[in-house]
Image (cartoon, rainbow, N blue to C red; front, side):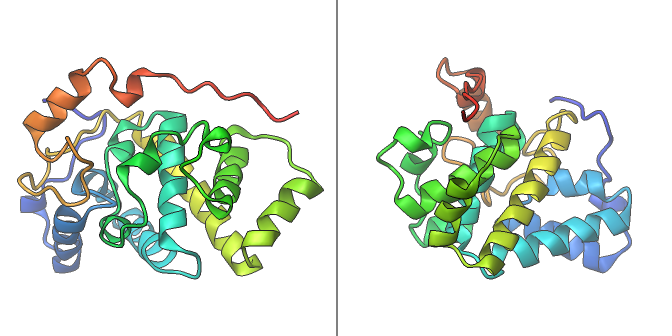
Length: 218
C-alpha cells in the first residue's frame, strides 16, 4: 500500500463527533472520499472549509450538478489527478446525467459528439481556467448564451476550487481504500475495491497513462 507524503489522521483517534460523521458520509457517498479529508483533518478549519464549500458549491448550488461533475472530471484528466479522476458523483450517476461514455472524450470535447452545446460551453470554461488560455468576447458570448451570471460565478469558482485541490492532492501520493475501507461510495466502475483498483490501474489503456495533449487557443 502506498504511503502518503502527509499522514492520514486515523479516525480512531478523532474525538470530534461532527468530523467523524462527515468522514462516515465520505465513506458512503464520496466526492470527497475519506482519504483526502483525513489529510485535511490535520487542520479542522481546512477540513470544514472544504467540506462546506464542496456541499454548497458542488452538491447543491444554482448551477446544474451534472455540468459541474463534467468540469471536475475534465480537470482530473487535465492535471492527471488519479485520486479524483477515479471517483464519480453518485448524484449525477443516479440521475443518469453523467455516464461513463461522457468521460471518454473530455480532453477533446469540442470535436466529440458525446456532449451537447451547453456541456461544451461549460467544458470550454474549465479548459480556459485549467490551461490559462486567452479568452475574448466570443468566448464569453458563448457562455452567456447557456448560463446565467450566478451560474457562471458558481461554475467558475467550482472549477478553480477543484483544480487547486486536485493539483495539490496529486502531489500527496494518497490512494483509495486506505481510510475507512470497505465502502465503494462514488468510486468509478472498475475501482470499487482495492483489488479492482490495482487491476484497472495496471491496464495498458488506463487513462492516467496518457498525458493530455491540448493546443492553446489562437
